[in-house]
Amino acid sequence: MHIVIVGGGTAGWITAALTIKKFPSHKVTVVESSKIGIIGVGESTTGYFTEILLNDLAGDFGVSHDEFIIETGASLKFGIKHKGWTPNIDDHYFGVLEGSPTRYDSKDLMFYYAFTERSGKEHTMTHTGHIIETNKSNLGPDMNFSRFGHAFHIDGVKSGKYFAEKCLKKKNVTHIDSEILNVNFSENGFIKSLTLSDGSDVEADFFIDCSGFSRVLINKLDESWISYKKYLPVDTGMPFLEKYQPDEDPTPYTTAWAQKNGWLWQTPLLDRRGNGYAFDSNFISHDQAQAEIESMLGRKIEPIKFVKFDAGRKQSAWVKNCVAIGLSYGFLEPLEGTGIHANITQTKTFIDEYLGNTIEETVNAGSINLYNRRIGQLYDDTKDFINMHYMGGRTDSEFWRYVSSGATQTDFVKDLLETAKSRVPSWNDFIRCHRGVGWELYCYVMAGLGRLDKNLARKSFTEQTYNETSFNFYKLTSSLEQEYRYFQPFSVFVDHFRSLRAQKDL
Ligand SMILES: Cc1cc2nc3c(=O)[nH]c(=O)nc-3n(C[C@H](O)[C@H](O)[C@H](O)COP(=O)(O)OP(=O)(O)OC[C@H]3O[C@@H](n4cnc5c(N)ncnc54)[C@H](O)[C@@H]3O)c2cc1C
Image 1: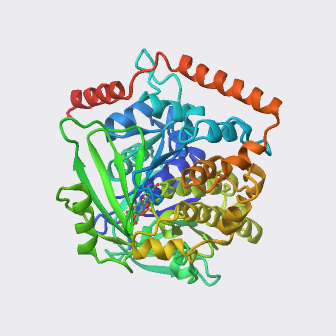
Image 2: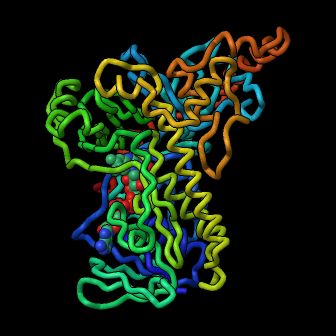
Image 3: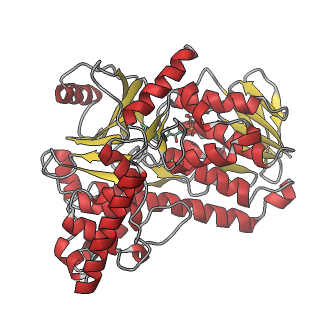
């Protein structure tokens, strides 16, 4: 089967890599336009990105975890520091990559205990939280990663190139640098070929649209748009890069710092920090956004560009012989760095569960409906989660007064907040979808925003369960201390990989 992937951004090359890894006999052609370029933002990943480096693309395929860090300057991420999301704007909380050890129980006693007795330190009952708290890394004493469990801060452009190089070593992968000018259809409505800027046509059996916001293929097949704008009003990103100050070190977490009209992201890589202001353009202009950030940071910045986006998704990711993956299907906003996670989920779901050896084995109405329902749920579910982050009750600007009025609340968030007045929510309150969000991530956010009640959490204990949990918490945090005693401080990870990069003149 011949598959054409349109787009050479993170989504395009990851999709190409995962496709040829699973189906080495399929022919894959990646068409991208260097004239158009890639979006070039998208630096904060989830653990799923690390998983594909370590599992799917390791070994024969040629991807190596440590080589990826060295070649691209990526750094480790163990969670997100959320700063200023409540009326007490100097406050912060951490969201980490995993949930509490008792999160599957209908009463998550370990979290309740941490929440009531170690408020603000809930994250310390997890591996990644312990690492953040102690400023460690998961690099062992022998300078090898003897334990994994991190996400990455990545450079979008360098990562795309890294995956492209690995893919182009395979004999069944072709790369075409050209703009698509026309999409040609067969009588049955399937895509037959694409006309390129040199006038040539590329034919294929199946097409994957990773063309970012251009939506070159999917817009011809599905004109719908499910907008999340009402719930996620932030609609513009202002990315800018900064070198570290001489006395400044990268942090092992992303910072999401709420501002007057949105929030600022800070994603520390080994040699520079990616930053960006995600704001609502109904409240400020581009110039005002830049001025606001410069005044807050106390220094000048140089925005790379202003990226306008409309939070939402297509009705269907898969139509006939075309699947849209990545920004071409949808985008929420950058908070929680869910974009690449969703790309990988879409790609792996399609390749592992739906793509067959032939077009006949692949395309049928049932599979298309099931896939579209699953992917739609993933985006809708994530939309609710991001929406919750804004419910901390800030009222110090027009933007925050609008959001805090409840006008943007999704139904699910409304229900969770209402429930939290009479009991602490739990795992079972969340509809599960593959690689979606659940209590394990909501718990930190709701606690950090002051949306959980300590008395209600405390009431969930009997004297016996309280004593047991208190002892288990002590045992757990002591064992984390023991386990990480010999792991390297985060600064050692940074120095080590900086020196390996320097040896290669990178
Ligand atoms: C402001 C902002 C911040 C973000 N932050 C994060 C984050 O922290 N974490 C995260 O996980 N995600 C983030 N994302 C999302 C992330 O950037 C994307 O999910 C990821 O980069 C994948 O993009 P893509 O490959 O779908 O699109 P792109 O990178 O835009 O690639 C599109 C490709 O299609 C090609 N193309 C387009 N039109 C044509 C044509 N006519 N002919 C030929 N080729 C064409 C382009 O040349 C390019 O190669 C962010 C997004 C935005 C907008």
